[in-house]
Image (tube, rainbow, N blue to C red):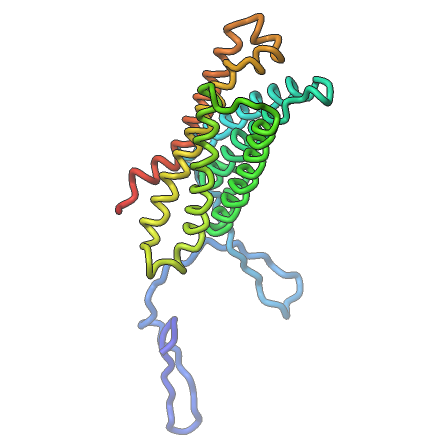
Amino acid sequence: MTRRGKFVVNKMGNATIHFNRSTAQSLPTPQQHCQNISSPHQPTVCRRVASPPTLTLTQKLEFVLTLINRLLIGFITIYLCWMSLRLDRKDIPWHAVLCTLGFLCLMSEGLMAYYRGNVWTQVCQRQEKARLHWVLQLCGSIIGLIGIVIKMCLEEVHFHTRHGILGLATMIILLISLLSGLGSLYATELKSRLQPRVNKALHNIIGLMTFTLAMLSMYYSFETKLFNDYSLDAAAYMDFRHLLEITTVIIFVLSTYGPLWCLFHSRL
């Protein structure tokens, strides 16, 4: 019995093979494109033509939101870095530069690594997205922690403002988040002690808490004396400071809707 039919062998006299087409079932064949070869001794070469993927309305909307989020992140990151790096070398507030790059830029990109509308990770597998997420979050955490330590070394009085208190809370929760991220990365190996679904849900919750505290600290950083002294635009125009605060809120919403969606739809 073959895929197309069956062979019938006549054992009387010379063996002949008859192909019975009546038993062949009609099978759906994929769309093929055949190319004729000029040589008569070579068979016709057929190849499958892959149809272009169609994007749904949700995927298109997510692509647009991801693009808008990156533009807003770039706007605040470039402005704060320009505001700080245009000063003299001894007056540069490295705390602002490093925390902006670590918490705002890299952490937001790490959260968007799983998004379907992310053009950077659209062709990546699930494991590759997880690895990229872990690398971006680790690099952002290290850079942000260095910025916090620099601020602590330069000032005698610490954590007396809302920005400082939220920064301290971010640093504490961040260390716990890194440990939970390591456990989530090896969730399969730890399934005998903790279910992978529960493990990843805990990491999701702690990670969202860390990013929320970091963005709140960023929000209140626009009210600090350092920002008002070095940002001439904010000192002259109050509306510009409000624009930066609203932009920070929008970045937070566009960066966290994916993890929140996964958390609400996870069945624990």
